[in-house]
Amino acid sequence: MIFCSKGSFTDRESGMNTYLSFYSRAAVVACLFSFSSAASAVVIAFDMVGSASQNLNAHTNTWAGAFSSASDGFEKYRRGVSGTIPGQLLDDTLSSSPADLLGIIDENNTDTFFGVTDTVNSNNTNPVSASWEFDITGSTNLSISIDMGAMGDFEASSDSFSWAYSIDGGPLTTLFESLVDEAISQNYALASGTMVSLNDPMTVGGVALSNQLQSFSSPLPGMGSDLTLVLTADTNGGSEAFAFQNLVIESSAPVPEPSTMALLGLGFACVRGFFVPCYLHPGSYPVLSLLS
Ligand SMILES: [Ca+2]
Ligand SMILES: [Ca+2]
Ligand SMILES: [Ca+2]
Ligand SMILES: [Ca+2]
Image 1 (cartoon, rainbow, N blue to C red):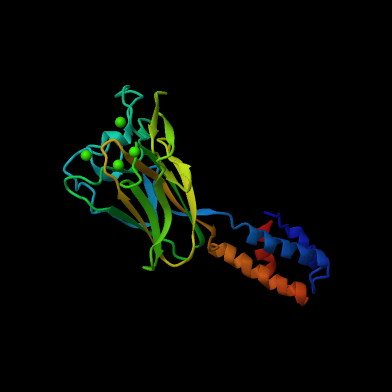
Image 2 (cartoon, rainbow, N blue to C red):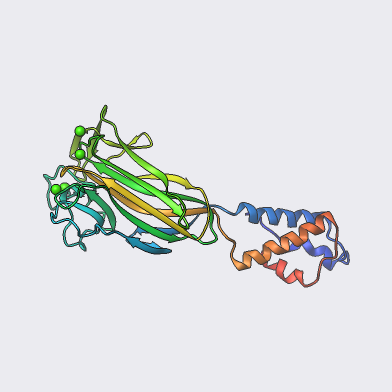
């Protein structure tokens, strides 16, 4: 941010207090633009970040606990907290199971994640979905990032997931869509250092997923108050798994805080002074001094 010095307004003290000097006006304009350009991305909502959430109004998942087999799953899990977690989601090679050859969340990752495995099973044959509702009131220029991982020898015909969103009940728009690439293989490094190569990895946007979580980002066009995210998945093997963590919504144009609004309002008043030189209201001086 450009430093906005109170010294810019010393002409008020030196007797030339009727009009802003060119220097003062330039400084005020510089201050105004410094506030405009200060709008860098800020996190406005998240879930599964350090096992915490922010501005999450609801998480709905009718499939949590719905499968009779402990090795099938579509829900949030957390090591040391969840009763059982399907083993294909967990890389246990660091200590509990050095011979483990399949897993995404290793023993150092003790935070909440969303795990998906073998959703086509004796209890279900259709795609399954879960949703998140975040309060995004007043935020614009939204974007989302999600850490994603997958491990398994997938099939294009039977394994997929997608993330979609809607704002204030509008139509769902796809953000991320998986595609199994049956022409390539992927090397997976387990936490112990064991390497496993498997055919037909899951890809997103042309990037092959692995058991190391990777962050994927997308703009979220639109604005409103209620952002709904929907994860839909369909996968049919006991040696295939996806996992998601660190679901973060950002805004690159946050609504200014009240104190900033006051300064912005003052900036506009002073810009008017730039074009139509006007009397610098004495009352504005103490406010301006906050800038220094
Ligand atoms: Ca495992
Ligand atoms: Ca395959
Ligand atoms: Ca499959
Ligand atoms: Ca199963």
